Image (tube, rainbow, N blue to C red):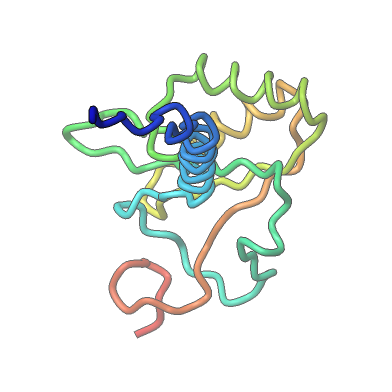
Length: 154
């Protein structure tokens, strides 16, 4: 007698749902990674023992954090960045304008190095206010640092 091949039609597996789940997981992890913001570790913040403590939990979702680094011999102009992406003044203005069109007035936090020149911070503030953002705050640290700030008591 001849052997019959088993019916292979019923043994097929539909991969579409599994691929859909994998893509959903990829999207989830990309969005989650984007939400965990990496700040420039080279920026040393000014000391501020008074003021409101801001955490990720009490910060409004629309808040944008703009970093202003100090000028160095390598970088004769202060680097302005968002999430470690260095921006020109025009690019920063476009980002602020697009966010303003989407959210209306939204909070802006400026993380400026304590060694940054005031004119560089003022330039960022001018770009924000020219595009309608007037809720501007500054990020500082509450702990006193011994050697990083010229205002630290010894």
